[in-house]
Length: 242
Image (cartoon, rainbow, N blue to C red):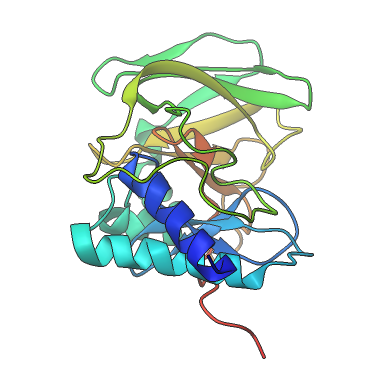
């Protein structure tokens, strides 16, 4: 089996097993670096010294083939690209509805959204702790989903039909690497069924002299995936750059 086919089959295994869909981009790190705007899916970093480019291309092509066969994945945020592209333009007109979280302050609950949030100290700095009624739980089928520096064949047989995602109540903490020194942040829930929360730093001026949001003062959290989605459009790695 070629390295390309191994990547293709690994993506197929993930999506058929109910994992969230995403693409890879070659760059340093192991995290979500942004989103692509054709399907509204996150893009993960694959590492800057990736030795198996064919595997990455195969993985991304596998995601495309699965979308062509079954339609948009369950974690697509295509209907909410306006929020991902420019969270400030969503937040500022609705800022009167925003809530504030302070380090080691009170728990803020949204019963209608099935969310409860707490802002506290973590090992790396200020972290967001939240409880959600629809949080993805890894079914334990795939090793290393969304991680960098991957290669090799899929570690399990591919299901013949798609399995539903494991979405159920759960708790998670995420390091607030956007505003890691801020003692308080403001946030605003996205539209119903978006599973997005838009955060604004409470310790930076919300606007510059032109009335536009200052750079890096906003962040978007996907509460189903339990991860930040940086507000930048990324292009999936689909062919060799030379």
